[in-house]
Image 1 (cartoon, one colour):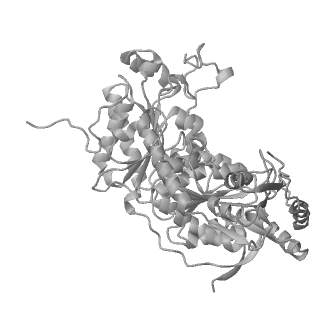
Image 2: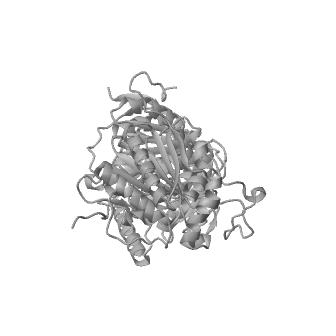
Image 3: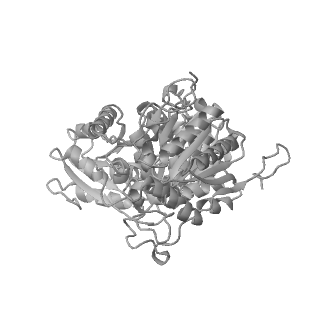
Length: 257
Length: 359
């Protein structure tokens, strides 16, 4: 019998600890599939966040270092600059990237660090139990915005991808989701493109994934997937946000000013 | 020619590069700006040398973590307020058992404080500084020559024990110029198996500080503790100066020890038999070595540019063995040898009394 579906080689044989309907496990699998397809397992170093994905080293069979909360892009910078021929990626959540680590992320992007960031945006702090995130929707009820997020008190959901796309150091930014088979395939393509972008030496690449968190959204998995379409993607529109053409070897002064 | 006349901060940069440091990340803060400036100029001249001016002290130490994990000798430097910011990463280095060298050119505090030389960060440096209970090796140079030597040694010690090592000096040491002879660096001993460089065809590695299982976390802490005990037993260093016949022994480190030596010359001229015990390793503190001196003299005076921090380590070493006096000036005031001379003269004959300022 022909095998049509199997565990990616760069995944360990462990069962995900993630909640039912969570997007992390899908994102993990997509990354692992891309690692296999690009054949980069041996030269890859992953940098993990604080948050639900802190235990991702239990699932990825690649070299992984756990960064302090929000510091992933700084740690990744250190690794990539020390080992420029390796492929380095950062896995970050919305609190990690857009709140406590915004400076590290913003400046890594601005320096055009040749790394890839996979940004899981689920509009909530998952691991700590559903507090308001910098990407929570206006009106979204969380444990720390019990009356719903109010712009006057809490500011607005941060559109990380749009903001980063303004930085000349970024080369490829796409926002995807994983709430349907079609969107999952699209997300995989984006992740693959982001890694390829790094391999080609084009600078900072980021894939934002709108990711369901049924547990903290207090929804069923199906309702969560619908909420991404009906609410979240209105504030965070899906699609390619930035895709610079490949740097021509000679005469391109993009990084020289 | 290996002999050069250079400013302390630049010497640290040069010594680091000679010791094989190939990664530096830092953020400007006075009085240590010559270190990043020197590294910005020199590191790109060396093969594989990387200099990054980071967006913050926090980013700098986390870049160092990345480079260290990748197997490169890495360093960052700052001054007091910046070192506070780095503590998250220093705690992480300790937890993950990664080597790195951190330079602290202390300035007056607390808070933003000022930019004058101070020794107010002794507690922070020698007690770990960040959260969770750990140690860093802390070296306290008192000459520019020693800044060169100890910076090189710091890299070796950090590798040997897989621990962050700190050079604790102050603004005066950083700005001072003295002739220096660089010693030959030792070849690096650090197993490739510890470096995170991609799994290749082999097993993948994990570097982490998060250990959720309490018993596993406990065991990790005991493992670190056993390492700290080994360091405490085998890595203490000190200097003693004119202690052979000393009736009173001053205890001071770094800039304060230089001032103490000046005072001792004056006191000796006045016929007072005064010596100096100078800890070179501030952690591990040379407790047993200091206690030995209590057999020679029972009159000790701790002198620091703070309100009394190393004083506590001296008390732990000497309590019950000798009388301990204290003189200190905080806030970035640099006391003069004359001032210290007067204080010592006052205590020299007061064999019965204790003039500790802080009990």
